[in-house]
Length: 514
Image 1: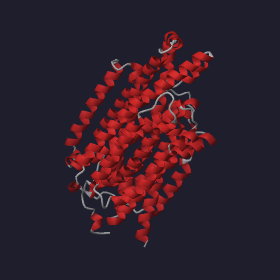
Image 2: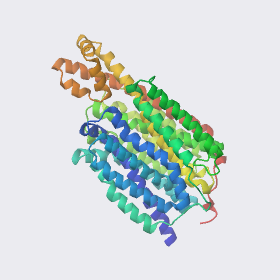
Image 3: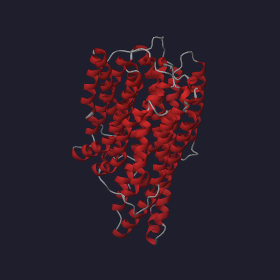
Image 4: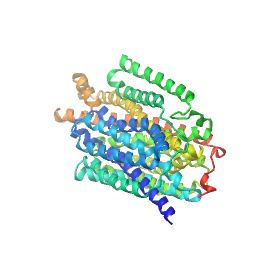
């Protein structure tokens, strides 16, 4: 009975930590407009609130997985909880965009350590049909965090302030640490591991440089020496990373694992769901709050059709993983997400939030179908002793997807928003005069997310013209990036259907021993 208890305590600790991590992401999205106002942040600054976290999470995941294999996943998991909790406290105390973004980067380090060991802890504790049940519960937690995140974030931000979305992590983290250290059984890799510092440095630097270039490209110019240099350096470092991983005896990421088409397909699916619908959460939130004028709590309520469906579908999908081939769950789910995104791409200047509703419903079902299947498939297409690396790789592709998705879509969004707003202004004589008289000021306001402040300085008729043009430009720009995100999800769907072959899955060791 004690062994059974340990299994479920493991699941409780992992789910508590995962819930905290995912809640933090969705809560932050809803609070970003309030953070932007409070800290006088630019559009680039609020992108970094998400990307600073995602980048360090992606950079440290694979290395953290190795540490878990080397020193014990339980101990490393507890360290990650501690780092995440302390950095959450500092996030809440931040008084500038720089301080917040640096704290978010530290949060990402803690999150990486937790993510890299979480799936491996579940896999070590459960076997056979129980593993399917555990991943079903894990999937429900993923969906639940997404479901309540916007509501919790909206309620906290509206009620007691955005800082408390970070402070709330501290007591949750303390409870999770106590459970981890007192109830979870230790697991580690029997083989001796070592840290691949060449892989870690080149991968981390390449990720940071590419995302930094995508975020700064519009401001500094895509042909500027800085942006071109960053992109070239990122490509060179990524090439060095690939060569180093092939030559290392114990690489950070064993690229030979990708000889199994299923591993490639699962990784592509992980990247696609994050770079599409999850990256779009930021811009959909800005549309609902900045463009339509809803508050944080009202915005969270309007995300419910998407988030609640993800919550309802996830446990069902987790149960189905033992009956339905993963390729159909992953491919079908991503196809629904793509359809949902395409359906959202019909906003206009006079749209209400309900224009997004059909897309929210389709995408919610798709998210619920994909999330738990990704979790279980990631460690089922590699030998059991590589579960830590597989877990880290899966989460890495997710976070790289979010970071590059937000940066890439944001780059397109910024350039389109400026162009479309000016085009909308030029329809009327008053608008043409505004665009001609204050082109530089208008560009700064658009890129800085400060158009409403600029409008407040104009007389009544001119203010109305500018705000209407901004709404027209915003909706048109949103339609463009929603289309791009839908194509990313569609490519992920095709890849999952084509590559995730059932014969590539490795039977669970636990199916023969408990």
